[in-house]
Image (cartoon, rainbow, N blue to C red; front, top):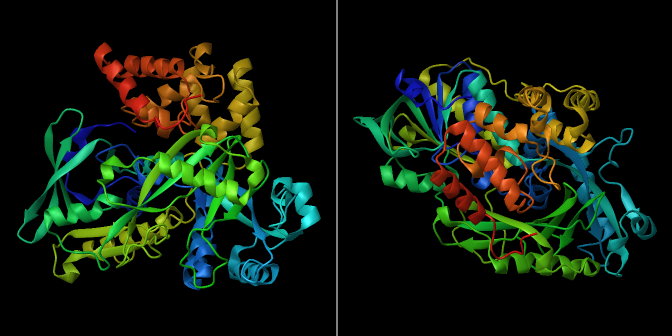
Length: 558
């Protein structure tokens, strides 16, 4: 996957996708699989905004059940299972504990009815050898005390039900896998390409005026259909270019923050009740905060508050961190969390379509939107695709690509993204792959490193080690408490279009997603990238400065 901007000038594409978060990446992937000529651009890095700022859950839609949206529950379950099939190396089952309390709304009876309905709709997981307990299993207080004693240190919880959901080792790697698979099927892709305007032929949009963010050089990209998949920036782009409105206009944004802390529960995730209001029609009280075991730590989120700033300036605040710490301590006093326990924090934006934006109430969109603006009096040749959540991005892409195909006259081209493996996803025996990676990498590739390579790259892990074969030093870890090896940095530059230090630290690897990996690690990564990309000493220093600034200063750096 090479960043060759001259390739955009050589043809008029069938479809140009603007925005390479998970929605745009899935659209480009689907369109390329259907045989369309595809261009995909993003003004920042692939998946660099909202797509990397979630709880990393591929959930089956239990929240939709509380809203009595059975259609959305079924859809979420189907889409969760599709992503498991196409990217099995990136997905794992995690058993959630849903605590039961002593009230009618939080008690065993109502929970049992809800999880029974969820299982009936297709959400149950059959137990396998060494696998998770089936969804709907009830753990009484003594059993809960044996499996998760922290939940029984107060009398608040009388037991807990098990709900199995899927969790991503890296949502960033899932997004880049869709981009790479689109490129492998002929799509021309590039990060750091902004849109400064539209190319028009009367009322018809025939492409965009693009700009290379790195050089400030301008060039056209011509396309028969342009798809706006820019997420939080979608509505602003449509307004600036006067293409028409969404069916349900974006009325504002909510900021969702997460923190990464020391590990609170090792074997289970838990949905902890809070005092924050919920919009559920069939609710159990307050909105929940999740505590999820992840990479030997706990991923906690999400907060929810109205955001009125510019989408470019989304950052977690001390208030966000304190709120999450307080929520956990109130429900789980034995945790004893303090702000100093937070190793990292991140935040993303969620578009809202509610007429009234209520503070501290989750009002995220339930339904995605695909709008062919020509059918609503707007610009022809222009489609907007606004996602609702990560789990259903593939389905959004299927609908958007079907609209594009109809506009192009391709009415009989089937979608194949629900079962076509992503790059690295043709994985049948993870244990055997880990064994072969250890044998190939030598003493410096231990079990943890081999496991991390499989979880990040799947069968592409062998390609990562191809470069390392030239020098044993390239299989050494970049930081003592991270599994990432030097060869991954070179692979990111040569094969995954990493252009800036932050691309490697936060999205191609897991170096920075659990907190600051240390200055020596950042320095080494910058040196490798400078060698690969020909950076000057001053540009290398600038990249280090920018990357350090990405770590929240409100947290203690470990």
